[in-house]
Length: 308
Length: 308
Image (cartoon, rainbow over the protein chains, first blue to last red):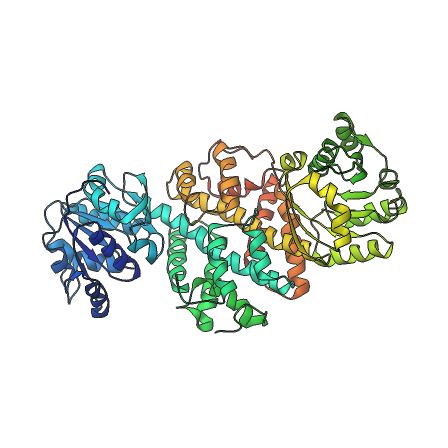
C-alpha cells in the first residue's frame, strides 16, 4: 500500500468474491459501503464490521468509485441502472466516479455497458478478476483490466487494495473481458482434462496420488491440474469454485464463439462435461466433481468413495 | 555421475530421441553401439563418433543392456525378435542383460513385450520418456519407469546417463506406460487448447503476445501453453515435436480407451484437431500448427503470416 487518500467506495454484490473485495478495500482504509440483493449477504458483510446499504443507489451515494462484483452481465446492468424494485448506482454516484466492473461478461457486453456508463460521464474499467474468495479477502486478486488512462488513474487506489497483480491489457473496455474469456476457456478445458486424465489413470490401475506426483512435475501439468487434483485426492468436493461457475463461463465462451462464427471444439466438449456433472447433481459442488461423472458412470474407485 | 563401471550398451532406433540417448550414454563413458533400419540415421550417429551396427542383433551382441528408442510397439517387437530381413536383439544379448524400453506404447503392449522378454531371462524396464531431442542428447530426460528391482538395478547406470529425473512408478511393466499415457492425454489436450485459445483471442482482436504474457502467469497456464505458444508468436513451425507424434500418442490413448470401454471426450476432440492439422498438410510441422487450422479456416492473422 502506498499513501493513498482513503475514499468512499461502493461494492455491489457481496457474494464470495464481492464480500472479499469489500473486506480488502475496508482493510486498506477506504470507506466502504456494500450492498447485495440478498439480506443474508448484506448481513455477512455487516457481521465483519462492514457498512451496508439496501440498494445500489444507496451504496453508491457520493462514492468516488463503485466496484461491481456480481455474477453476470444482466446483474451488472441492474447494479448500474436499477430494476423495477431498486434504483441503480448511476443515479447517485459522485460526478466522474469510476465504475470498476469485475464480473465475467462477454466482451460485447463489456463494451455495451462501458458505453452506457461513459455516456453518463463516468470512466469504466473492464476489470475481470482471477483468484478465489481467499485471495479476494486478502487483497491478492489478479485482474486483467482495460480502459482509458482516466479510468485506470481513478481506479488505482482501489485496484491497489484488491489486487496482487494487475495486467493492463488495453485502452478499450472489452479487451479485459476478452483476455478473461481466453483464460476461462483454458481453465475450463484444463479442469475437465485433469478429471478425465485422473479417471483414466485410475481405470488403468494407477494410484491417483502417484499420477499427481508425476504429472504435476511433467509436461502434462497445468495450473488447474496442480490446483484441483488435490481436491480429488482428498475426496473433498466442498466448493472452492463450483461446477456452475464453469457452466456460466464456458457458456460465455460458447455464446461469443457462436456470435463470432468461430469454432472452439475443446471448450464445447469441456462445457458438456461440466453439464454432465451438473446433471448428476454436482452443480453446486467443487468443479473437480467432473471426475465423479466417470465414477458415477463406471464405478472407478476414487479417494473418499462415492459421495454423490 | 557416480563411479559407474562403463558398460557395453546397445541403442536401437537412432531417430531424434534415440540418437540423443545414444550420445548421452557415450558421453557418460559407456561403450555404445547404435543401430537403426535407416542407413541415414546410422550415419548420423557415426558422424558424431558413435559405433554403429547394421542390425539389432549385431548391436546387442554381448551388451549388458539394450535401450529401445523406436517409435511404436511394432518396432519394439521387431527390435527384440527381429523381422524377416534382420535378426533381433534377444538373439545376442548377454545373459541377464536388461531391456530398457522407452517407446510410447499402450500399457497392454508393455505387459506383452515384458512377458516375452522376461521369458527369455532378461529383466524388462517399462521406461517411457518425456523431453525433446535436446534433453535426450544432454542426458536430461524425464523417465516414468516401472519394473522389478532387478530391472531397475541393472538399468541404473544407463538411466543415470540418460535422465535428469526418474520417476519409479511401480514394480510391474505397464505402469510406466500407463502414466505416460495419462501424461500424453493431458499434453495433447493442452496443446490443442492452447492453439484454440490463442486463435480465439486473435479473433477477438487481442495481441497474441499479450495473451501469452497474461495467461502464462494466470490460472489458464499449462506447461504446454507456456512451451508451445512462443512457437506461434515466432511464426516458427519447424518441428520441435511434430503433429504426427500426437496423432500417434492420442491414438494410443483412444485405442486404450476403446479397449477399456472408457470415455475420453477431450482426448478424442484433441486428436481430431491434430488430424485437422495433418489434413491441412501440417503433419510433419510443429505440433503448435494446430493453430494454423484456425488460420486456414478463417484467415485470422497470426505472426509470420500464412506459412502452410
